[in-house]
Length: 128
Image (cartoon, rainbow, N blue to C red; front, side, top):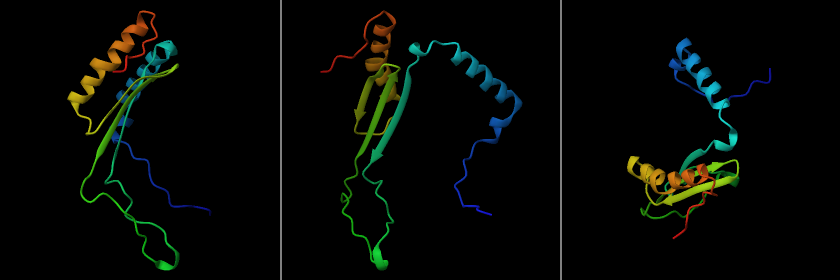
């Protein structure tokens, strides 16, 4: 039959209600009405040194040796915003993102850039 085992893509069952389908359609219509050059896309990504793989392939059933930090785990978060013209505001911080960090990113980096762009400037933040 050619069937393969694949990971499922799960979503909340509430997403399938008629009311939520209508909300998504209205949202999509609203987004389509905004000129693409006015859109700014935000993304957050993080990495931690504890994200090392616990399993690996080895020849002949041998163990795979790997060095990792001895309990000195580090976390790095990257917040970024981009427009059709590329990246416009980027920030890295050595801790997990929480509300205070995200609001500081918006207030001190993204908002000034967005305001400058709205008023016809390039909107590139000054680097200290």
